[in-house]
Image (cartoon, one colour):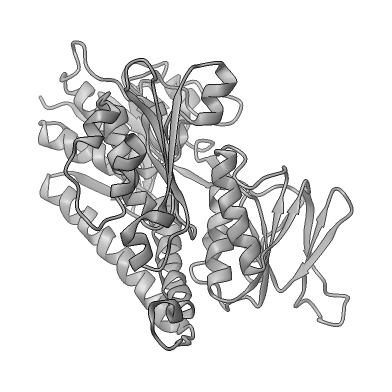
Length: 459
């Protein structure tokens, strides 16, 4: 009898696990309540990057004179942009669905709740069905965190999922939250011409990133006219129905007394896992104080036959990480990891921030190494001397590589500049495979290309 594998959640973790498990002979059922492909992926990541790409095209047109062209001015066609976003989402969702169907995966649109360690009740429009399983994967993702002091209305006070695109493009917007999501929204809305204010609770944007990297982004924001409220923590967001604007003004109040007024406000202060309604206690699965499901290096919960992956696992909230977790879960469940194998090393996961300039990093950070007292070698090369960067009329940014001074092994790196999200793959491969800086230096790269800066930084 085939292994019965229940997957709750059809996002990157769930659909990857389903595909691999089905190929290996499992009897797979996926229960998804929202959208096959994942709400966080298709309702957050893909739409935001689509809008950022459109905003980037507008920014490029505004600086076209630097490439010998007459400056062009482009306006936003909201209907066309919405159609473009929906078209990309539909294409990706259709591709995922067709792949799962081709593998014989049973897909159920509904909600699932554990009723015991080996059973779950699935509620659909047709009724309730009880499923028995040998193994299960919890991959239900996350949703935007909304504090008690804010009540988003989807009109002027927005969560991140209300912005793709907004009902109207804001003339001015206050973004609360200076992490990855927050700075991407600052970039996006400023690219579309809005006056943007960013509430920064600490003394730098991207507080978890390299200060030198954050400084480049802050400089770009200030150049664009973005207002940075550093050291301010928002305590209230409300519409001003008593003022002259009769509700058309949104007021953001901060703990230090500062007040920001704008036509819109976006709340970007993180997310919370979707685990509260899964009946995990009935399955005997432990949940921590934050609602996350603790896992070991094989994505196994405290129940040896139940796994967790993606945002609910409390690891890096990246689609790439979720997909790899899903693959590892399927392989382990089907016996491919009975012996020694390479576990997921979350410290070696590459990540990117799609601002302008783009920011990407992987592995050991310079500040982290110094804080721990570890000896490292850091080399940095600016794009200002790179031929392709000059051809593109975008010489901002740099490449930084962190290596072991004794062995030359690449430990990490960061890139700030155009196409950083693509270029970081070279350093990520080096970090994962324990390559040396000489391996990068001796690679015959394309000329002219931005990647040449990688070889220079490795020398």
